[in-house]
Image 1: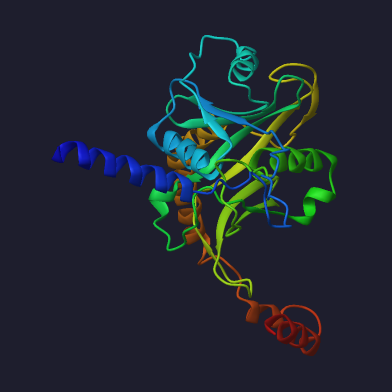
Image 2 (image 1 turned 180 degrees about the vertical axis):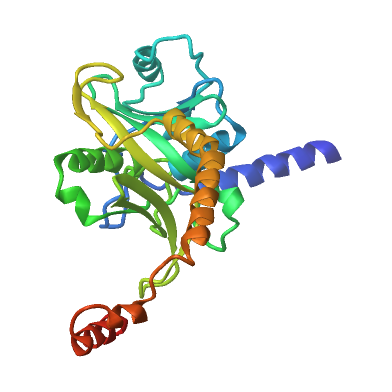
Amino acid sequence: MGKKGLKRKQKSEEATIEETQVVLPRVRQSDEPIAKKAKWINRERVLVFATRGISFQHRHLMKDIIKMLPHAKAANKMERKENLFVVNEMCKMVHCNKCILFDGRLQRDLYMWFSNSPNGPSIKFNVESIFTSAELKLTGNCLKGSRPILSFDHSFDEHPQYSLLREMFVQIFGVPNHHPKSQPFVDNVLNFSVLDNRIWFRNYQILDENGAIAEIGPRFVLQPIRIFKGSFCGETLWENPFYVTPAKTRRLLRDSKKDKYTNNKIQRKAKKTKELLAPFRVKPENEIFKDGSIKEKAKKLLIRNK
């Protein structure tokens, strides 16, 4: 009897609890509208990868660029035997409309391609003076995935080829607003400046609102070679007349060292003949006693010595 009484009491308590519960209507009482998520309108995606044969320094530079771009996608290395036109198919497979390709040669030279896939244009650069973030060991730092400020030199407005390069850099290095992997902060500046027919890349951290900056890294120099109408193909829109291949510069350097011995031999011979002819030279004081006016010659010698 005791157990039945307990069960009756529990059922009666549950019934009273259900009667006390009030079901609220599914209506929002606040007059404020629900905050909607911002749309990701700019759908730029950049494919960053390399060909086989790049050195460890070039690979670290590629990783630094991937870290700077939250809208970038990495891919496996590509065989050098394949045609570069295959890159357009790779971009289409991973839904990317921009591409950065690192093409290494002989474990020492690095070429970088910037392409707008699949319609173009595409630009080929020779990369010089490479310093990765790990090599520099600078004090600056920035938040990973933050949106950078792009700063360009006034030279990008003076020449049409540099204006095209600026538009390409804006589309590739500019992080889309409200990107899922980006952060809502602006704490670094990417600087592009033109000097000696080359584009110098620097990355700075914004320290305070007064404009103080500190370099982060990496740093490198881009020497444009050609601008093609299509993506890795098409006619040449512009070609750099000041470009010299790295192999040719190394050959000229070897030739200059090769002639070092012959130049030293000619200089020693010229010095020896100069020493032998030194006693036979006429002193300027003896010219006074030659035929002519002594005073006028003395004035000329004084003017010459001054």
